[in-house]
Length: 100
Image (spheres, rainbow, N blue to C red):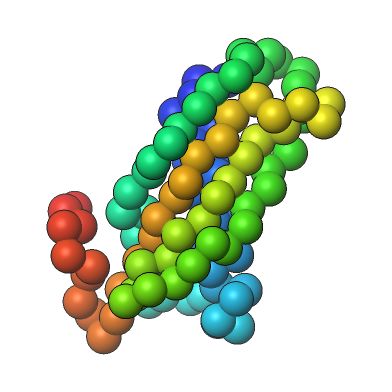
């Protein structure tokens, strides 16, 4: 599995945790933007048939930026990890630096 897909999966899990944390049920108008990734590490390949388990922890929320630590494991062994930052769209305004 390509590393970029593993990071995207961690980012999606972070988005779900963000919604759950603020007790928001997302609809078509609710968005969180993936704004940064830091400290991405890939420790071993993920092969077809592997079961990827994602773990995400909210590290902090500050000025509308949510920072998470996420990891991906196969058979109890960490295969990738990263710090993920997301920001909510508020009142129709995208976070600074978001380009579509």
